[in-house]
Amino acid sequence: MQKPVMAVTGDETDEDPELAPSHMAAATGDMPAYQIRAPATALPQGMMMAASPGTLHSPQQLAEEATRKRELRLMKNREAAKECRRRKKEYVKCLESRVAVLEVQNKKLIEELETLKDICSPKAD
DNA sequence: TCAACAATTCGTCATGTGTC
DNA sequence: GACACATGACGAATTGTTGA
Image (tube, rainbow, N blue to C red):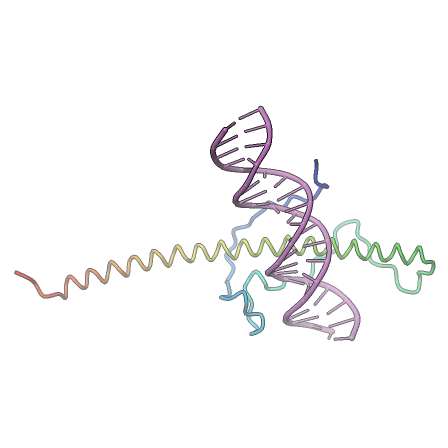
């Protein structure tokens, strides 16, 4: 059993986007980095623009046009989904590395606190 | 080796949001 | 309001893991 041939993505870039804090912030106007809209992509090779309205007449032509539009929409959405997932992965990666940095920072602060406590506590002798 | 299950990946649909 | 785009949800296909 074989899936229909599809484009392989697999390419993950290691960019370092500035990330916005919340994914659920759309209503407030700020959105996470992976949600920032990219400029509309050009149509892939071989894809033609729709015939201008008014040049279609027969029901068959109309049906073909509808099919063509649907395929175009599916293709665009397929690509959009891929891009969306790529951005989301990047976003998660970035969050994870931020967690790692903060954990190190936190550990250092705790150590520093212990040192200061030692210094400031009255000597017991 | 292989079946069973879990995890991952992908395409599609539905829906929310921004732009004109 | 129509349109385009982004994304969550879902199911199907694929891939990885594990115990017999």
